[in-house]
Length: 122
Image (cartoon, rainbow, N blue to C red; front, side, top):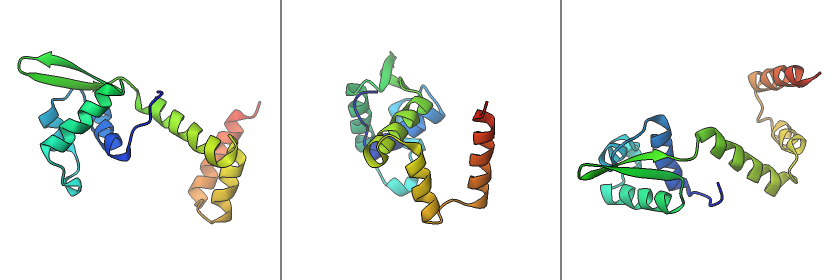
């Protein structure tokens, strides 16, 4: 994915990643109510996502069905890489150290990291 998506566009993508294809009206229905977005706002966001080539649409009668072209895992990988590159010189260790220094890792987090490291060790 070359062009970044905004936080608002990400909310629309979450809906489409959870279920697709969907009409614009169905996307509107599934956007969390606390966003308080109008149908026009969601349609604008769908248009932006189409122009960024992260979703596609196909005609079904008088309406369009929207679906993601970028997998959620692909998006998460790209965003994670950008974060590490921008803030931690592309290295994971300083990121984990940063979280640990601020007591932001729970015992469960630490156990999961330990298990992952054991799996990765040859």
